[in-house]
Amino acid sequence: MLKLWIIGARDLFWRREKKTGDEYPSKSLYYIVCGLMRHCKDNKLFHVYFFDEKDGTFAQFRKVLDARMKYLLAKGLGTKQKKADAISEEDEEILWSSGVFGQSNSTTLQYTVFYYACKMFGLRGRDEHRNLQCSQFELGEDGKGKYIRFIGRNNKTFNGGLGPRCMYNIFETYLNILGNDGCFYRKPLALVGNTIRYGKQPLGVNKLEGLMKEMCQKAGLTGNYTNHSGKRTCATALYKAGLDEQTIMDRTGHRSSAVRAYKSKN
Image 1 (tube, helix red, strand yellow):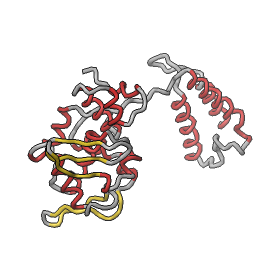
Image 2 (cartoon, rainbow, N blue to C red):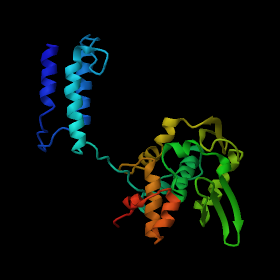
Image 3 (cartoon, rainbow, N blue to C red):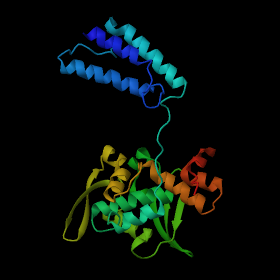
Image 4 (cartoon, one colour):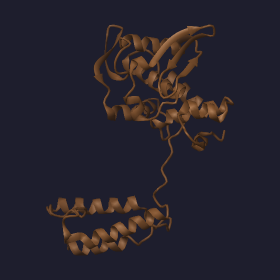
């Protein structure tokens, strides 16, 4: 019976999708094989593991699968990744009006700081956020007014902001709560009275990686929102403001014209 399943799976490698007529991408073939192994496990065939290179039982099967996946990847099938959406001005307004952004508790304050750290300074996805320290943000005032300076791969300064959405005030509040020292993202704690608190432990890696998606879902936004959306939003906003490409690259950290992919058609 297992042999028939394997033969059937091998035949499927060369079939095309019924709806589009296209060849199955390599990732789909991988998932099919994983599904077959799961079926075997459900039927107590625990010895079946096609990807064990030390087991010669399925060597020919692996060889066929590997060759097919390499062929499909060489054709470019399955290599296109869905791009993260930028946060539009309308979406940003919803994040505020829905209460996802603000200073009402530790979570809303952290959401706000996270998003605007992305938008203002072009911070990258998980890794750059994960390593942030409070000391990398400098709050000051000069002849033009108050400013926030981010000290990273390039020093970046943000000016402006008024009223309850003044980024200077929001970052100042957040940093003061953290004692202006240590890890920038920490676990939010429940309010004690009206006091916003954070724990000593850094925010978990997985939690941090899904922060943009989480806040957008809470606001009811629809789209493919990931942490990369913040950087895309930063570049798009700078393009719309008419800044030159080199300035945008300095802000986002791009080293080539790949930054043009962030240019909004609108």
